[in-house]
Amino acid sequence: MTLALNIFTVLAVSAGTFFFLAGTAGLLRFPDALTRLHALTKADNLGLGLIVLGLLPLVERSFGALKLISIWLLVQLSGAIVAQLIADFVRRREPLS
Amino acid sequence: MTLTFIFNVVLVALLLTVATWIIVARAAFSAAVAFVAYGLLLALVWVELSAIDVALTEAAIGSGVTGMLLLGAASRLRETEATAVPAGRPLTSAVAVLCALIAAGLAAIVLFPPSIVFTLAPQAMARLPESGLGNPVAGVLFVYRAFDTLLEKVVLVLALVSVWSLAPDRFWGGVPGLHVYQQPNSVLTLLAQLLAPLGIVMGIYMFWTGANNPGGAFQGGTVLAAMWVLVMIAGLQNVPSTDRRALRYLVVLGPSIFLTIGLAGFLLANGFLAYPPGYAKPLIIVAEAALTLSIGVTLGLLTAGPPERVAR
Image (cartoon, each protein chain N blue to C red):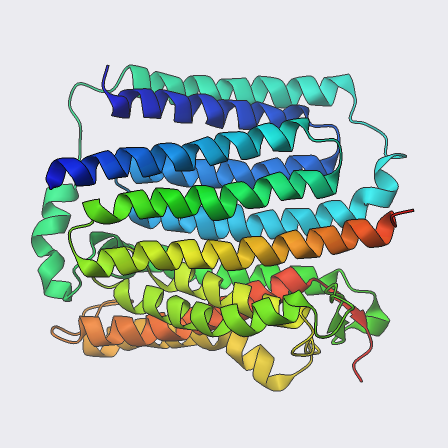
């Protein structure tokens, strides 16, 4: 059981890290602000979500698990909204033709 | 080589890279953005050194509030930046030499530590239970070095007065020129509505738990200030004019209560800022509660900037 949980943790955290790497690559390589935002939000939502999911079996008390999940939810909320605000700003400055 | 060691090396390398970037960045705005990232990395370093209180303060004040103030200053200076005259070679060289000397001095202290280390930590820890506080950092701030803490809060009020003094005479006591997001009912409104209640609870919790765990008035007050600024930027609440009586009382409430408790020490205990035996913790909690509120209002007003409009 412990082995299975450990394997799950390694897989989920690795997958999360992959999304962060991909997001960073996108941030550096994509041509404009909107596509870069698209890359970043993937890292925030999926990457952090998978890392939190992977860490959950390692948490000793259920209160800690609740904290981890709320961190993910808060980052989701602020990340999604800040991405919207930046996108809105970009769109109004350089409207799509 | 353990994983922790590799992590620490990477962390320090990142920190130095970002620090270099702040110095060489051409635009003030980029430098300010990098400064925020630098503060968050530095907070991680403090966590690695087991200084959670310092890490919280660095993230909240060093990165958050200072970053916000620098970003505000950078965006105000943006129009004049292109025409600004760069500092001359003698000045930049002097700054470089002084910074190098400070760095060399710090490096010398770290690389060649004195053979006999003088520390008051055991004595401080031995008598900490008398204060009723469980967090040694809170003990140092409010018992052993309470005078420093008092001055720190007074400095914050002075800083606010200085920022207000930047206003032209006709706007004195007017409304700060905080940039309010123009569109009503946007996603920002949603963020302010969802996050502000959570943040207020979090800020109060950080102050309350500060007696026994990492946290305290400054960190809690900063979170409260951030929530207030968010609500104002989202347009859910008007930016108050700076001549509002209640607002000014709130700014000085914390320092005044702390000072009163300090003066009462002459009568009830054996000197300035001394607490009567057995009453230390309740008095500290009262002072901290008032300080949290004052810090929140003061930092919020600092972020809002100098008055730029006449009060309605």
